[in-house]
Image (tube, rainbow, N blue to C red):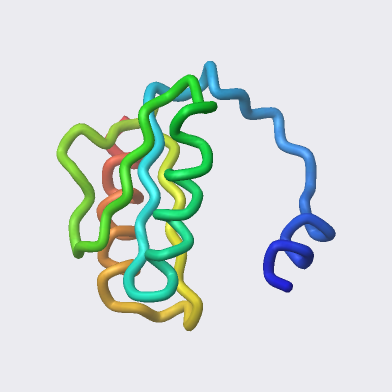
Length: 94
């Protein structure tokens, strides 16, 4: 159901994998499981390394060339919000 919703609401963006050097998926609990499924499915297909994080802080290698995808079912998971603030601070420094 969530996948169908996401596909139906998808709006074209002008991003390409060439804009990034890696992908970081972050989420906890059930939201983190989605990241693990995506990594498992795309790992052999993706031209970029994919990392799944279930923590407050993103890895230090995250920079403006990292595609960060945060997943939270409730929208207020403490760890995911902390990771968001970290990603935002990284982007504001570039």
